[in-house]
Amino acid sequence: MRGKLSLPTRVALVYLLPVLAIGALAIYVTLGLRTTLTTNEQVTETQDIISTARLVERLLIDAETSLRGYLITGDEDLLDPYDIAVFRFSRTIETLARQVADRPEQRRRTALARELFDRWQRSVASELIEARRGGQDFAAIVSTREGTGLVSAFRETLRELLEAAEQRLQDQLAASQSGFHRMETVAWVWLAAAVCITAGVGALLLLGLSRSVRDLTDSAQRIADGELDRRMTVRGDRDISAMATAFNRMADRLQATVQKQQRTQAELRERVDRLVALRTRESNLLTRMGELLQAADDREEAYRVVAQTARELFPDDSGALLMLTEDQDVLRLRSWGRHAERLGASAFAARECWALRRGKTHTGAGDEGELSCGHVDPAHPAPYICIPLVAQGETLGVLHLRNDEPEHEGTLDWTDAEHQLAATMAEHVALALANLELRHRLQEQSLRDPLTGLYNRRMLAEALPRELRRSARAEQSVALLLFDLDHFKQLNDDHGHDAGDAVLRHLAGLLGENFRGEDICCRFGGEEFAVVLPGADLEHARQRAEELRRCVAEAAVVHQGEALGDFTLSLGIAMAPQHGDSEERLIQAADEALYAAKAAGRNRVCVAGELA
Ligand SMILES: Nc1nc2c(ncn2[C@@H]2O[C@H](COP(=O)(O)OP(=O)(O)OP(=O)(O)O)[C@@H](O)[C@H]2O)c(=O)[nH]1
Image (cartoon, rainbow, N blue to C red):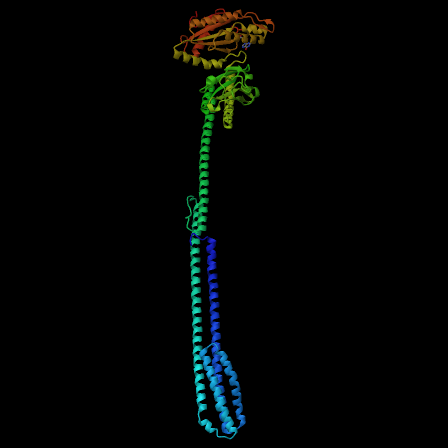
């Protein structure tokens, strides 16, 4: 039955079994009761036969007793019971005959009894009554003993009939009783069997159900606790096994979903970790770049820092730092990357760059399209980005990046993150370069004389010891020229202080023309100037000094339309290490030489150590 019947069928069976059993029992009991009823009817019939037979016997006795009384007394009234008995006998014997009609033996006995009574009544009783009325001797009739014989035979016949009837009654009662007992036994056994079978089937059903429910609860609990590979045991019952299979399928899908979710989460975490690591690295690189730019002494150092940081932040890209000049030209001051040679023009007008023109970040494909900047080389198209370097509202230049990796070729697929990173870097670079420029300007201002633009005495105090050390290391000499405008006071007095200033500025211009870039030209104070010539020997220094003296003597300065007349220079030269290897001694030696030149008549060059 297991596995063949569904759960509802088996539950229905548990209910149906006792109903069927009780129904069958009811039919059985009904049939049994009918049998008992029939038996009881038969018992009643037999009892009726017995009472009728007893009545027949009593009627004979009544008739005989009445007859005897009349014979003794001759009183006619005493014959009434006789007449009644005879009358009732014929009707009663008729009844008895009907009652035993279906039983031949009893029918025969009844007929015999009727015949014997009739014969007694006709040939004995009637004769005796006639004889007594006629006064005849009825004793002779009695003495024949015919009557006694008939009555005895009658009684014997009735006794046999009664015995047979009573025997039959006994049999019927016994049969009725045993039938009832059998029915009672069958009913109890039937009921007990029905209860046992129902209880057994119900118990089996409950056992199976409770085991499956326990298994289901346990499995669900374990899955809820995270034991996702837990499954139900699929047992034979169709519905339960279907439920277990469905549960297991649900658990499979749940496990697959959870595992997929865990995988996704792990991937996500990994990506986030990678992203965080990348962002941290980028942030560290930007921070380091900021610190290095802060510490940079000059622009060259700053440009190197920018190039190195860009190389690390954008390892797949080539790039360039393009700086704007005062003439609105753009110069490529640094480039980096594997394809730096493809970066295009190294100098171009600012309008060539869309980013500079619009003041906004510009991306292009680098081909010949209209949206590509003019400075990009269309022979090597690659996606690029130009970000203006803007600090404190001033545009300093452009950070240019291009990607020559194959997957980028011909596309504009700079990601938002790359955009953002490049923009952040550009912000840092712009701010740092602006700061550097400001620092440079302040430093320049503190080291320069505002009137002439030449370095001031402070710069000389810094530069001279440095040059002395460097020359000493290189075993070279250093020349110091110290010179002074002759009769400058007179010039001021004659033409005014502004005219004097104009002469001083003119002299500064002449210094710029007569000395090299590495020579350090300073305004020493008032109308006194100094020039340091690193690596120069005495002859060279003397030559430069003479050239300057001549140049000044020949110069014509016009101030506010007025020719300021001739003016001359007196110059002193001191050489390191011959005339002094320290700043103080060298300056002193040069000053002495200058003083000697003045003393000798001005407009001349004197060398320390050659003084008279
Ligand atoms: N216009 C102008 N004059 C200056 C400046 N600094 C110093 N002087 C003047 O330069 C003059 C220097 O005069 P002196 O020291 O007597 O020297 P000198 O007149 O050139 O005479 P010698 O040097 O002996 O030839 C003074 O009158 C100062 O006022 C300056 O920045 N501008």
